[in-house]
Length: 425
Image (cartoon, rainbow, N blue to C red; front, side):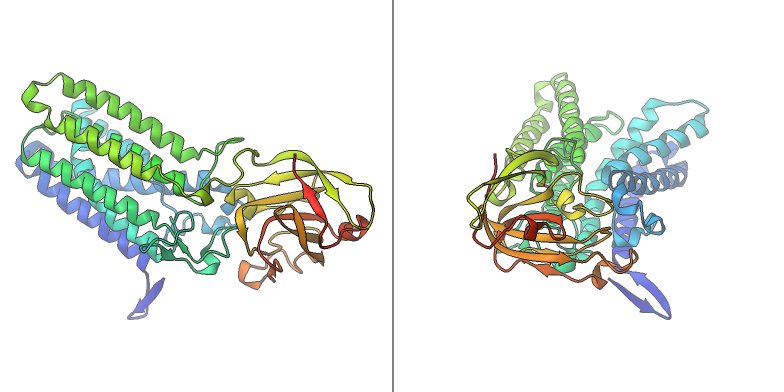
C-alpha cells in the first residue's frame, strides 16, 4: 500500500517500520541517560546496530526464500514489499554492535556488548509490535484458515497456494504483537523494580527465551514457511525454539544464583512462557493436512476406471506443503514421474495457474479419491514473463482435496472419466 505526498511516493509498510525503529531508538536513548560513558557513544552504537540489523534482516529473508528471488533479482532489495527476518535482524544487529565496540576499544569488550544487548531488548518488543502492523498492511504473516471473531480477511492474490477458497485467517502478526507487548511490560516492570541490573545479561536472556519459544509456537499456525527437508518443521521454527530453550536454561541458571527475594521474576517468567507456549502451539484440524505423507515423496497409486476393468498403477510425486504446492511444476522441463499429486488439508475449491510452466498439462480434480472433473490440454503461458495477474486461472468444478497434474493428453490416453477412483498407498 502506497500513497503520494508532494509528488513523492511513500509505502505505508516502510513508514511503519521507520516508526518502529524511531520508537526503539528514543526508548533506548532514555534508558542510557544515567550511564554517561554509554550515552557518549550512543549514536555510534545505534547506527552500527541499526544498519547491521537492516542488512541482516533482508539477507536472511532472501536466503531462506531464495526461490522467490532467483528469477527476480531486482526485487531483492525492495523491502517495502515486505520480507525482513527477525532472526537476520538479531544476527546483523549483534554483528554491528560487536564491530562498533571493537572499533571504540580496539578489542572486544563483552561487558559492553552485554550492556547494549540488555538495553536493546527493553526496546525491541515495543518496536516489533509496531512493525507487525506493516504485515497487516501487506497482507502477510497470517496463519491457517479461521472463522474466529478476530480472524482477518486476505485478498485472493495474497493467499497461499491451496488456500484460495478460504477468506479469513488467523492474524499471526497480531498474536506476535500482543506477545511482544506482554514481554515488554514484564521487562520494564523488572527494570523499574531494579531487580536486575543492566549489563547482567538477564534482560537479553529473558527476551530471547520469551521470543524464541513464543514465536516457534506461532510458527505451527503459519501457512507459508521454509521447511526443513523431508519434515513438517519450519527452519525458523527450529532455530527459534533452540534459541528459546538455550536462553531459558541460561536465565534459570542465573536466577537460581540469586537470593530467594530476587526470584519473583523467575516465577513470573516461567509461568508466562508455559502459558504462551501452550496457547501459541495450538493448531486447528485444517493445519494437520496429510502428515503421514512426506512432501515431495514418490508413491505408486492405483486408478480404478469405469472404461476398463483393469486398474492402472502410476507413479506420482506428492506435494503437501503450501510452499511446494505454490511452486508445483514451475520451471521444470519434465515431470519426472507419471504426474504430480497435490494434496490439500481439506475439501475446498482450488484455483491453479501455469506460472513459469514449460509444457502443457491435463488437470484431474479429485475429492476423497473420486475424480470429479478433468481439465484437458491446459496450455503453458504464451510468454515466461507473464505475471500472476496476467495468467489464466483454472478452477476446480467443485470442492476437491487432491489435484493430479499429468502431461497433456494423458487423461484421454488413460481413458479417465468423472467417477473414476484414485487409491493412495
